[in-house]
Image (cartoon, rainbow, N blue to C red):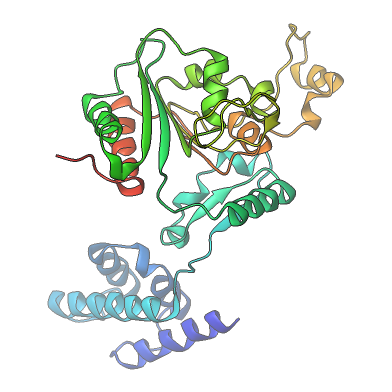
Amino acid sequence: AEASQVLYTSYYRWLESTSISCDICPWLLALLYLEASTMSLSEVRKVLQTVLQGTSGSSGQLQSLALSLCTHRKGVLQATVRPSSDPLILFLDSTMAQLPLEACPCLWEREVVRAVSPGIALQALHRSERSRRRQAPQSGYSVLDPFGNSGFAGEEVRNLVKGWEASCPHGSWKSHIGKPCPSTQEIFSMLGCFDVFLYMGHGEGAKQLLKQDLVQKGARSDTHESGMAANDGRACPLRSAVVLMGCSSAKTFRPVATQPLPDGDRWALGCEGLDEYESFGLPLSVLIGGGPVMVGALWDVLGGDLDMLARALLELWVGKAPG
């Protein structure tokens, strides 16, 4: 309510500073003022020209009016909208999970994460506070194109990871590049002792590498943080922040029938009881298994774009390789 009052007051202050009559389509002008922060100057000018219908004078006066509106609205936005330093946690149903909510303009300056349930989110927060991990990871294990069928784990990312391996300031890093694919035992051992687990390859490859039923059970404590072998082999929460750079690697899906359905798919789906279940997928399995976070692609992305995104993310998070 307070934000609405500020916006209402600022609109009338701008209107009073102009020569526009308050009787000329006030609701259209108010709507334009509200949306001006998401429009270009030329778009605002065109709308003003249509709304005012030639009453605004010359073309130069119209341009000046559009500029004053955009400048005034931008100033109000900067004064009233202060991005919060706290993350926004989204708990979404199957329908909302398919929308790119993180791309909304109102969330551009906000850290947004998706979670499976409040209980699991609170457990992850409790573990992170208890361990007091550093913001920059000090260890990691990368698996780049383990099936040998993708070419977008480019040289830049490979050189970056290799540079970390040879650099003491970046901690302890290991990598597996190309075939053969590492064993399941090796993968889950690494998930229990490294800060970061990085995969680059096809999205379906990530699902083959990380079996969801096993991921939900957590890692095996075969290896301690010190690198010494443990004898108990008990399950423990996933230590690694899981980064899966592959098409739709973070997308959730509704369950589908494993047997062919008869005619009337919707009715048959209801009989199978599958429409009662929410969407599920690998990111939720990682969180259930105790992982602190899972980073991936919500939709299909061009390989080259994923390569550039991965490098930018890793350099910002971990740091650039020496040299």
